[in-house]
Length: 142
Image (tube, rainbow, N blue to C red):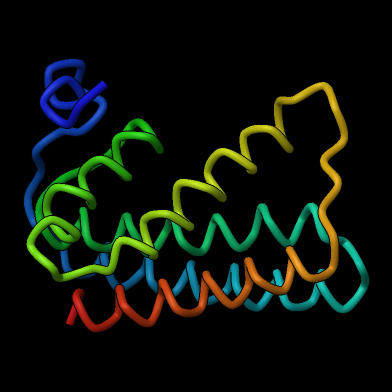
């Protein structure tokens, strides 16, 4: 599915730009990172992936709210950022790579029938990626 189909299927929709929602999404992202760090200290690595992704997703939503859009699909959020931020050089491709990777891992963790084997180094990398992503989002959300 491409970005146009996301809009056609109303998985992304126009809305009024909303700076307050954007700021709240960034706050939620920061709280998710703090939760991921707590979970990491106790060895709950699968949950670290979930919270790290949540932080990244909320950060991505902050840009959508700022730009005047709302989402109904995690996949379509990735497509939106690729087109409107990566393609024009405002966001690094690596940020989108990690957002999409953790989106898929989150899906497998929540809905898959096999236990994910998340190692300490993987969980730590997820937290680092989420922090870097959120820092980039903060600069863009201004």
